[in-house]
Length: 272
Image (tube, rainbow, N blue to C red; front, side, top):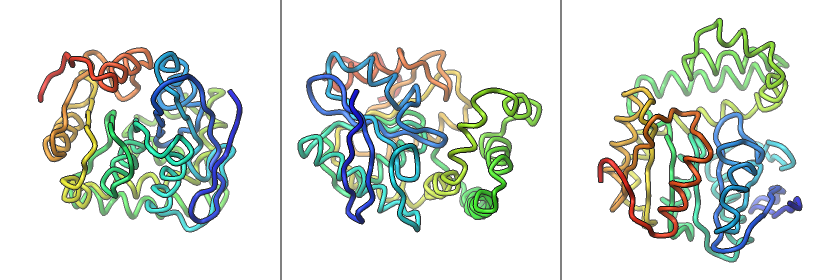
């Protein structure tokens, strides 16, 4: 795949790769993700390229994309708008994790997204927890700016994802850790996107895209309940559970579900 770029509204260069043939589909990754991420980047794109023209991109501040401070949700929505224009003026959009919340914000703002698919967007409806996340986002920013990237990554895993410290310690010795530290400066922004849960829920009636909201059958009950609440709030949205899957969803299962919905096939779904 050839690396291409598009200019966002503020002049920031957004890097993306395009593969396949058919209706345009843009993949939006979450925390710790660039355009190479298995469940929102080129590996997933390769599974879908036989049916769609898939654009996998580096969100601003990641990979080969530029960055123009300050970080803001509206700027990332403008990035997605520029990609939709590059794709021909209209595109299906898939968002994974906090990338799903960003994709949802784009649909709320009325971008040309005929179909929207979200996998386990972290919907935070508890106001007190949202405030904790907002404070932690500032602390993560300070750690990254101060050169304490490992600290930022560790705190995200233990305080946001609630991983046990021994598991995080093992991760520190793995080859992937360097790549995680490289994205440490983006974690505060993703956490702020997540903290807007209650505000976003009040805005989702504005969504006009045909929407599928998915979760994993092996994910924690609190996460699944919040995602189902979101699905009920989006006009006409469908909900589907991928049995046996967790937040770390299998790309093959994800690709199959995406193709079924985007092609207009019959969903074997739970919920609506």
